[in-house]
Structure formats: structure tokens, C-alpha cells
Image (cartoon, rainbow over all chains, first blue to last red):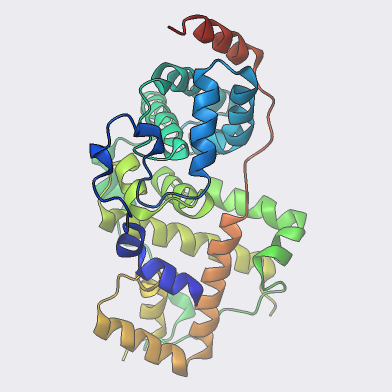
Length: 244
Length: 78
């Protein structure tokens, strides 16, 4: 049940900033701890300092830490691995260009994610993979049941209930190599907006407000997209793991 | 009384803490009585936690071009 309380308290619980007027601390930009900051932030601060001092090791460390995740992010918006790599490389140059102005208003991670997402989005729209946001309403929010209606009786009760899974915990699930593969496949077959929301929220662990901001969608749309995406991934797991 | 089908549609709003109190209580009451829906919810939570453990797509090497650009960038440090 821990997920419940986590989800329930997000906006309030995360905004208990010990320093309410952080933006009024001149010269303390990188030290400012924004809402939702993780303890890793202090690591960010040190890293930014080393980067600004021209420490190449810090740059490779940063790339090593984020490259794989950024590629995954970029791939949610563009159609090929090659395009994603281009986007990420281009974004790293953007990171270098913007680093001196980085004020730590968001975590370094969120800031870098945002740069990648913005570039990947415009690239995706250009390549025709990412529907422009105006087309979101019709196609991606049309009614789409979470579970095949044929699995319920006319009264809406389970006729064909979810089967128990061969593995019950994420840890044991991921020990099976094929599970990772079919989860990746399930994610990849999602419509792009659903894939983007699921990747940001569940794979990367961003909160809903951040996701709405970077994708420029309403909270309601975000929730609908997340719901559909999660329902489909659960269904894919059930197909592979369900014991009848 | 919520139906099982409704539960499967409300599950994300429930997990996001977005159900109004009355609806939340009805949701929980249904769960208390329906083991299929308890299983559905638990599988949804497992799905979410598994997604969170996927990690990066792959471990790529640092492109040489980027390091070259970094050195150039460093050279412009005021």
C-alpha cells in the first residue's frame, strides 16, 4: 500500500521546502534546494562546480550517469536509435552552453531531461513520429478500456479475472531476462504520448507536475495517458506470466 | 457500489491519490470484498515498480566528438 500514500501526498508532501524564499538568496543559486530535491543534489552541486572548472572527468561521469537514460527518453519521441543519439549529443552541447547559467532551480537531472525532451520533441515532430500536441485530443483520448470488456459480465463483474502471476515481485520478475524484453516491447508499442508519460513517470520516476510541464499537457490528460499505458503494460505482463 | 470493470478504470486515479473521498471509500470497500480486484491492483503496483527498476536502455560509450566539444568549451572559460 506504500504506493498509495506516496501518490496521495505528492503535491503537499513534496513542497515542504525548509527555505520558503529560495529565489531570494542571491549567489546561492546552485545551493538552492528546490521542492522534491533528492539528497543526490549536493552531488549535483559538486559536479557542476567541477564542470565549470573544466574537469573532463566530471563531464564523462555526467555522461556516464545519464547517457542511457537520455537515450531512452529521446527514443520516446524520435523514430530511430540514430536520431535519438543525435538528439542526445546535441542536447549535451546544449548542457555545456547553458551550464554557466544553471541556477539549480530544478535538479541537474530535471534540467538535463528538459533539454533532451525539448530537442527530442521538436525532432520527433519534424520527423512525423510525435503527433503535435493539438492532435492529442482526438486520437489519444478516445475511449479505450483498460481491460477487454469481454472479460466482464454484463453487470461489470469479472468473468475472466486476472490470473495469478508466475512471479510476484519486480525483483524476481526482472531476474527473468525475457521479462525485461517484453516489457520493453510493450512500452515500445504504446502510442507516443502514452509512451512518453509512462517513461517519464514510471521508468524515470518524475512526478506528475514535472511531467505535465515538460510535455505541456494537462494533469487530466497526463493521468489518462498514464492509466492507459500502465494498463497495457500490465496486460502484457499478464499475457506472459499469467497462470491459468 | 462500484463494479469490477469500474475498478480497473479508476485504479490509476486511486493510486495517484486523485479520487474524491466518497469514491475512494467505495473503491476500498470493493477491494475488501473482491479478491480479483485486489489481485488486479496488486499486479498494477507490481507493474509500476518493475518499470521503475528497468534502468537505462543500455550503457553506451562517451562519443569522442562530445569530449572534443568539451575541450573546446573549456577553452572558452572566462
